Image (cartoon, rainbow, N blue to C red; front, side, top):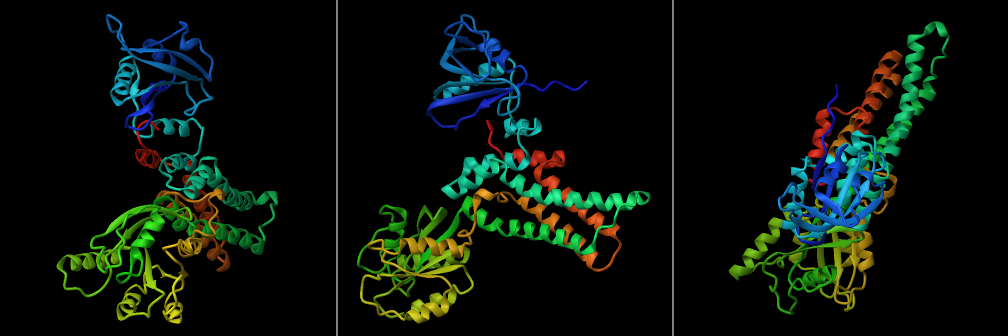
Length: 461
C-alpha cells in the first residue's frame, strides 16, 4: 500500500525580521495539525473551514500545561486541489520576528508536521500536476529577479510560456515519429510513406526553433544574473562621474586632480533592464605614487575577468598613448567606447574610435546627456535588445543541456534523411529528440533530475 505523504511545514518568508511572517503547512493532515495549535477568536475549527477562508486567533505551544500563547495570527485555509501544492494547506500569518516564527514552527512540528526540505512545497506542486518542471524552475527565478526584464521572463516561465514553446516542437516531432512508426510497424495497413521533402522541412523547422531558443540562453542569463562590468580609462576622463551617474548617487569621489580613485569602487545598477555589477577603477597611467600604482595594477587585473568593459575617453582632448594602449588591450573583450564630455569642444579623433570599436556612444556624464544611447548600446552589445522575455526562455543549465541534446538528435535525423539512410534511423533520432524535450518539461524526468532541481530551492518554497 502506498504510504500517505506527511504534512510538511516551514517558515515561508525571509529569514529576517519583518512586519509579517508566514508559516506554511501542506499535506493531507494540514488542517488537523493546525487545529492542534490554533484557536480562533470565534472558536471555529480549521477542519470545518472552507477553502480561501481566513480566521483570526492565537497560536499556542502544542500540549503546553498551562496553555502558552505564542502569538496572535491569521490562519488561511486552502483546500486540495485548489492550493499551491495541490494539497490541503494552512498558512499562519504571524508577527515577523524570527524568534516568534521559530517558536510557532516548533509548535507545528510538535503537533505532527515534518520539517519541509528545500523546495519541497514546489516539488509537491510539480508531483501533483500543478505545474511542469520548467514552471517550477521559474519560481526561483521570480524570487531572484533583479530587474523588470528578468521579472517578466520569470513570470512568463511561471505561466507556462517555455512549456508551450517546447510543446510546439515536441508535438511536431511526436506527429512525425508516430507516422514513421506506424508506417514501419503496420505495412499491411497500406499507410503512406512520409514524403522526404515534407519530412525534412518539418525537421528543419524544429531545428530552427530549437536553435533560436538556445541562442537566447546567454542573453537571458544576462538579464537574470547581471554582468561584471569594469569602467576603465586614463585619469580625469570622467570614469567616476559616469559611475555616480549610473548609480544615482555619489559612490566615487570626483575631483579635478588626477589619481583621485585609487581603489576599486563597486555598485550594482540597472541599465536597460540589465543588472550591471559596476567597478570604477583607478585611472590607467604610469605613476610613481605607490598607493596609486597598486590601484592601477588592480584595475588591469579586473580587466582580465570583465564580461563587459566601458572604456571612457575624453572628447575634449586628443587620444593619448595610454588611450591607444587600452584600446589594443581590450580588442578581444566585449567593450563599449564611452566618449565623454560632449558638452566641451571636441578634440578627440573619433575616426580612431569608430575604427576600433563596434559599439560606441557620445555622452556627457556631468549632465546625463546620452544615457539613453548608452543604455541602447549596452543592450545591443549584450544581445538583450531583441529578446522578448514573455515568449519563454531557457533558465537553467539543465534546460539548456536537454534542449541542446534535442537539437543534436534532430540534426542526426536530418543528416540520416539527406544521406538516404533507412527511415528506421530517422525514427530513432526523432524519438531521441522527443525524449529530451519530455525530460526538459519534466514529463519524463528521472528522480535524480527532479531531486537536483529542487535541491537548489530555498526552504519554505
